[in-house]
Length: 220
Figure 1 (cartoon, rainbow, N blue to C red):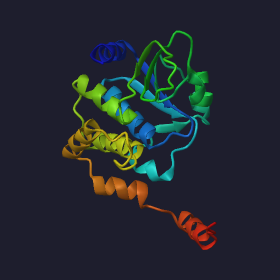
Figure 2 (figure 1 turned 120 degrees about the vertical axis):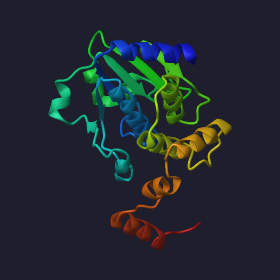
Figure 3 (figure 1 turned 90 degrees about the vertical axis):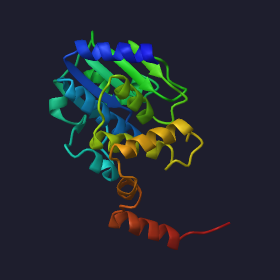
């Protein structure tokens, strides 16, 4: 782990423009991890953009207060390129969809994932199948770089781990996941607020849909 993280940290030092992307229609782990990673890179005085194919679900908008995450369906995205590209939790480059058009020849690709079906593409691949979420890997990377996690980044990483462990209920909830979660709370992440935003902040439309489904439920 240390050797791979050192390679990534050195790559960041020599790069100027960076792209962060993830799979089509990003989820909570992807969104929280991308934003936390961007925080570190921006504080390293780099030009950084997050571009995905697919909009952020409304329940995760609170994580992106600066509206940093862009949808690929944007004219300005097509005419931009980076010399270092982070691809997060994708088994292969096909999973990033149309964003693949932004991967120019000569750009270094860093592949970070925790899923066992990863094909180990890219110039640097770090795949930890024991990690509960990508958020755990990003946490370890940032702390290895000596980066101070503020409340905003702690919140983003807590949301990433929370959603991929099913609110710490799934079998991937390890002692390490709980240790990191506790550390993120100590850094300012508020479990109640994060849970309320993601799981209990329902729109009228979604509540009406749920009501319709329950009223028309049949058992066999």
